[in-house]
Amino acid sequence: MLELARARLPGTELVCADVPPLPFGDGAFDFAFSSNVYSHLETAAARAEFVAEALRASRELVVLEQAWRLGRDQELWELRRLLDGSEHRVFKRYLTAVQLARELDGVVVFASAEFVAVRTPV
Image (cartoon, rainbow, N blue to C red; front, top):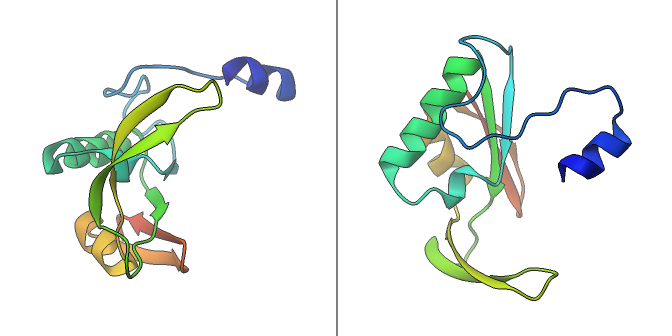
């Protein structure tokens, strides 16, 4: 992905790192955005660490996740098949906008049948 990004965005600084911790100083950013990461963190402790670390490096965080809907389990292990044919079991949680806002102590900034987004802190 970094090679593709470098080709499309020459001169842009790109960072790949194992996290946490994020490889940035305290308050390095005004804003952080996370898409489809939070819902794959299995434990409440891991989710809390993720949010705390994002808010250490930025003043504000928006988390976007797939929405829960009727007939969908809220928490499960899913089998994912990649383009190379490999298969992986991944943990996944589906949340309503209200649930995500409550967990993050934030405010809903987007909600649809498919996705929810919450901003924190408010």
